[in-house]
Length: 348
Ligand code: GLY
Image 1 (tube, rainbow, N blue to C red):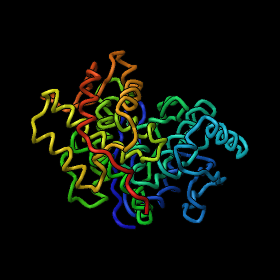
Image 2: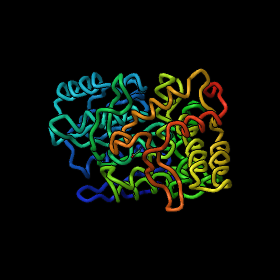
Image 3: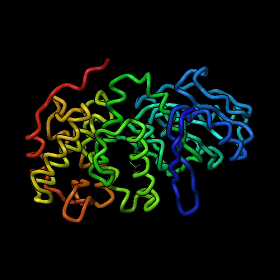
Image 4: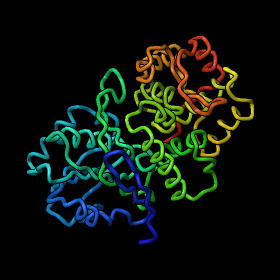
C-alpha cells in the first residue's frame, strides 16, 4: 500500500476522514473496528472478489450503478435487504460503487432505523471527487434529478485510486468535469497535477466548503458551479450525457454568461473554455435539444425554487463566486445560442 492521504471533514457535530490513495479500500476493517460496528451490509456495484474483507460479519447486496437505479424503489429494496441482513442501529452499511450508488445507498442509510452509519467506497472518479463526500444523498423522480434526499454524512470515505485503473475512458472523463470546475471555486489550476493530487485537492476544497455550510444555506452553492445547465443537459438527453460531461459544458456556459453580465473579463471567460478543453471535456451543447427546453429545465432547478427568483446561476464575479438570481431568460437563451452543438463524447 503506498502512502494514503487523509483529509478531515470537520462539521459541527460529526467529523470523518476521507482517505485517498492506492489500496485505501484495505482500511475498511480498521475503520469499522474504530466505529465499533457489529456487522455490515456491503451494498456493492462491484463483484465480491474486489471488495475488502470488512473484518466483521457481512452480507453482500449486489446493485447496479446508473441514474435509472437512483430511485425510491431502490431505497426500499436496500432497506429490505438491511432487515434481511439483521442490521441494527449499532451496525453499518458500506456503499461501494459510483456516485449514483453512494447517493442512493446513503439515502437508504439515512432512513433505515432513522439513520445508520454508512462508509463509502467510491469506485469512480466522479464519486471520489464529489458525490461520496459532503453528506448529500438523494434519488431522482421522473420530474427531476435529486428531488428526494437527505443530508446524511458518511462515517468515513475510502477513495481507492486502484479502482480508477480500469474505469472506462468516458467514466473518467465524467469525473474530470467536477475537477475542472474546481479551478473556478477556489482550488486553483489543477492541470498538470497527477490524478491522486487532483482528487486530494478537489476533496480538500469540498471539505472546507461543507465545513462552512453543511446544509447548503449559502457558501455551499459554489459547489454547484456549472451544474444548473449541467443538470438540464442530463435531463434533456435522458442521461445519455454523463454528469461530469454536462457540468463541463455548464462551466463554459457559466463563464460566458458571467462575461455577458459584465461580471468577469474576456480572459476569465476564455479560461473557462481552456480549462474544460484541457481535460478533454466537451464544450458544446447536445445537438437536437432546443434552447427553450434547456431554459425550462434550468428554471426548475432547485436553486431557483429556493430563491423564487427565476433563473438562478452560480457565477464568478468581482466578489468571487456567488448565487445570481433573476437572470433574464432572453440573455440565457442568447448565450446558449453562442455555444456550438454536437454529439455526446464517444464511449470506449
Ligand atoms: N455536489 C454538490 C454538493 O455536494 O453540494
